[in-house]
Length: 119
Length: 107
Image (cartoon, rainbow over all chains, first blue to last red; front, side, top):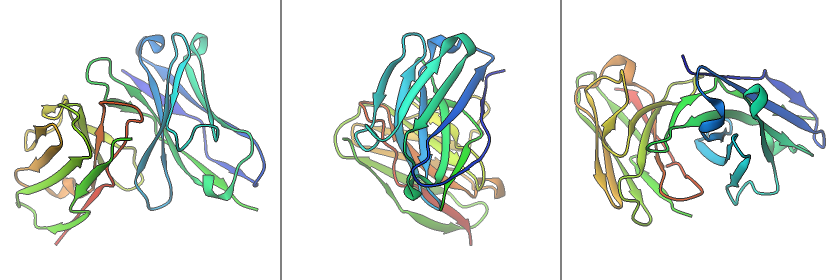
């Protein structure tokens, strides 16, 4: 069974750094792109970027380029999303999702990680 | 970037109603479109990919159609468990944008 399990909720202060994770199982982690999606409170889905764990090829949305870093460690089947300096506006739920190899949709999703940034 | 405009953004319907949601792309995307359902507090769930292919185990009352710039998601007979928010996503070119969502509520 394909599963993506994300790390737990985080409460941080503005200016702090953070790295959240997404661990895949039940399939060959290296051979499917993994994407990250933001959902701010009460709002819609925003595509942030995507990484191919096999070679760490990464693509970012222009809206998020330079604001976050996406990485992956294929040896432990885990993708990451990190911030070097959080802002209150980063408060959101962050989902990871596996991209299918045929139609490129997100066919499996993690449960989401709530990040709260507040002073 | 390719913009996706969903309409309506909100609709209220009865159980048993036939429902159609539209997603318009700002430029042609062939059939590179997916539809997702999201319930409160849950991750999105894939319903349809390649514009019209039903994901495994998704009920057949859901269907998708369209190509180019105009797409529709249809629910043939709305069930209580279908009350949720629906999103389209284009998979034609980066960034892989989502539509703004359509919230379906019980009338």
